[in-house]
Length: 102
Image (cartoon, rainbow, N blue to C red; front, top):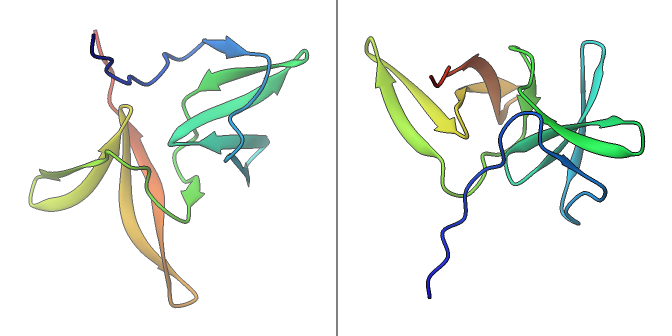
């Protein structure tokens, strides 16, 4: 009797977002980010998507992992790679890549 929380896969749809989501606008998209998962609104549902590279979030979700690639430190959660940046003196995290899983 033990449960393990996993991130939903891209394409998964829900009718209602988790209550603690944040709206993030980038490029042509309005994302809804909840616990590190990005959604877009489509036909009265919310679909899990990969964010565009360059999307910025103010904080990382719980459960992220620190990874070092070619000597650079990144943060990974749900196959999304983030890099720590500064915006107007405030720490933020920018999406720099998506890890493709086969």
